[in-house]
Image 1 (cartoon, rainbow, N blue to C red):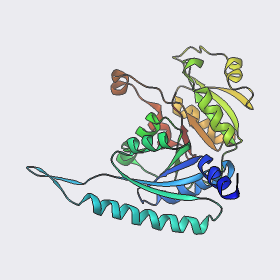
Image 2: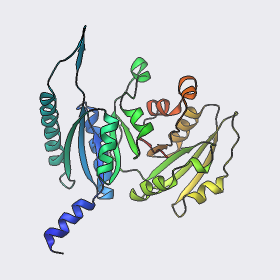
Image 3: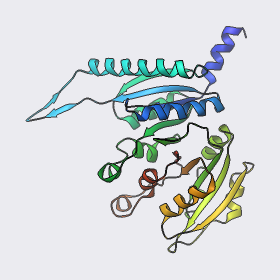
Length: 281
């Protein structure tokens, strides 16, 4: 294999980190964090903008701008972001892509086309109604993506995680995506800390040792926390543990649960100050 062929093979074999951007200030923190991951894993970064057609609703829906105009604006914005990022982070390879449609659908399509390590998106501090509405794109993406999705809050340190806390419940080991978690933690050369919040209402169905054995030979620890509230228990642990990334394992709830029971993913993402990664089964 000659040098040119080897370089082409190397680029094709690199994993991709997708940074989803809407050109808001949160993009900067997402890119910086993605760069820290790329440096550890040898990945390249794809800067992605997914745009939708704005429609004016009068008597009839009317397109307010052409598809070509939207695409040109997206590509111009991505070009500017890439130029700034490449100048700042010279050792990392950046690519850009814009797509029309739904953000989650567009990202899933790209995931099928590339060897993707994870998706990174930035989040800004919110309060009140804004916090309640958090996740027009981020939380639905975190709950449904087949790849790990990392939400990086404003003010986070752009440092690859070394201590990853995974929050588990009592639903049993068969619900845990062990292979995905192991691959992700191994790629980042990090240590895994299993945390289970024991509430008054639940019965623990999976033992401490069986959870640790699931992830062998990963360096793993186990911590059980007593708390009446899951979110409060997790946030209290994080404030004392020195963790630098929280991992959540969202479950597929049925319609009744989605309507009437409190889901923890949106609440935790809105409360913690650390980056949060969601990995689905």
